[in-house]
Image 1 (cartoon, rainbow, N blue to C red):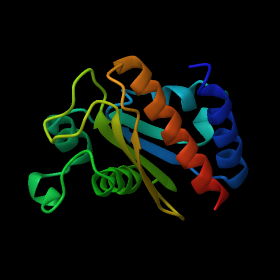
Image 2 (cartoon, helix red, strand yellow; image 1 turned 60 degrees about the vertical axis):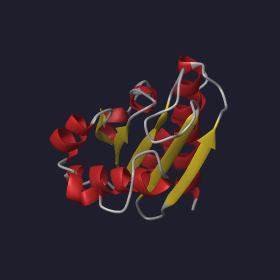
Image 3 (cartoon, rainbow, N blue to C red; image 1 turned 120 degrees about the vertical axis):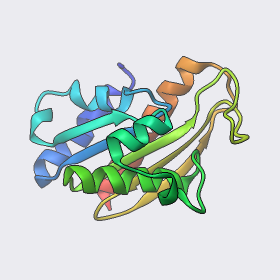
Amino acid sequence: MQDLSPIAGRVTERLIARKETIAIAESSAGGLVSAALLSVPGASAYFLGGGVIYTAQARAGLLDIKPEDLTGMRPSTETYALHLARTVRHRLGATWGLGETGATGPTGNRYGDAAGHACIGIAGPAEVSLTLETASPDRQANMRAFAKAALEALERALKA
């Protein structure tokens, strides 16, 4: 968490100063993005909520995303990460939504992505998406890398 705290602190400062809010839908980061943001004092001013959307059941139950909503897209893509971000933003009424999806490891996912693959989407006044490839099978290291990349993407979006 120590490597995430400085970035989370800067994001927190910006969100509070701008009186903006965030909602999180993360998968392969396993809740680390939310945990980093919540570890900074003042989170209640901007953090509306988040969930670990790790399965189709979570996607349907927590975000009300139905299979037909995913026509033409597959998980673990930038398009899907943006869909998560837009959906969680809308459902929680946040200024910003952050979506993350990928393959943590030690093996790849069922969609053919290798371990260490993550896609991040930020939806709000600006939209950003990116793909990260660590090429590592180390599950915990990938989770930290995915969370760090997500927080850095959010920080960049907040500067736009």
